[in-house]
Amino acid sequence: MALSKQHDLHKRRFSRNLGLGLVLVGFVALIFGLTVAKVSTDDFTMPMNEVTD
Amino acid sequence: MSDASVTASTPQTGEAGFGDYFALLKPRVMTLVVFTAFVGLYAAPGSVHPVVGFAAILFIAVGGGASGALNMWWDADIDRVMKRTRNRPIPSGRITESEAFGFGMALAGFAVVMLGLATNLLAGALLAFTIFFYVVIYSMWLKRWTPQNIVIGGAAGAFPPMIGWVAATGSFSLESVLMFALIFMWTPPHFWALALFMRSDYDDAGVPMLTVTHGRRVTRVHILVYTALLAALAIGAAFTSIGGPVYLATAVVLNALFLKGAWAIWRRDESAAEADSYKVERSFFKLSLLYLFAHFGAIALDTAMAPLGLGGW
Image (cartoon, rainbow over all chains, first blue to last red; front, side, top):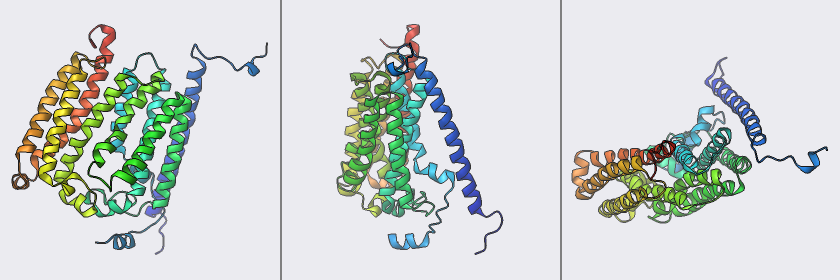
């Protein structure tokens, strides 16, 4: 069976790629948000080897 | 129709769309997981940063979804036989079994590690145990072995509010156990009502549901007994620290309706049920969904009103 230019298979592949891309972007944003939330809490302390003076 | 004939007639394209992978996560079950986990986290004492709370709910949901994908991988043979599950991604041939297994395992590991890092290790460990319980204890062991599959396996669905609570506080407490118990006791009547009106599905698949092993009369008795026990627990919980005026009012009304439904199911025989296409059983099943969401909604509402001096006792 010859594949037409816009076969259903291409649509499914595109939806998968787009979905995964959006999930990854969302994950990056979430990790950024989590990092900001974690370091801005009162009980956050820098590890000793990161403290310069 | 044999499994082999179904497998042969469904194409294994390996080109599933994003929606097919999402369907593997059992999104409808996930709504219950998300909502109850949220209530567990929200009702817990102390404050959680909104981003951390959001991440915790998301990772619990992903863990629940991973359990769903692994369950579909293991139960693909049953899903091919049952009408209700025949169009799921694996039996319909859109996703292969090995893809579902890999997807489920990867998501499970991801969710456990991320929840542990975002909140605390105990919450991560409890999520790992929940996934293990649902996939290994329930799906692989109990489901095909004992008619008590739903009773014990229901624990898997009861863990999310407890995980939410532990994510917020770092420890267990009586309140989280009560929320667990509420879902645990609710699960058997909910699923047995479904088994009554999806009558041939479980027979065809050879799953030893109570309807198949002990008959439909016994199942009706069990629904009534479990509903009575659930009502006592749900109303009793209103006088503990998770309860409040909103919860008490909700519990009284809904448990009266639920008991009335269970009583009607108990009084009916099969010929009456078949005559109206299981109308009472279907409405009991729908009510059971509202029942759980309303109880947890009431817990959340009482928590929200507590600072105003209106919720809680």
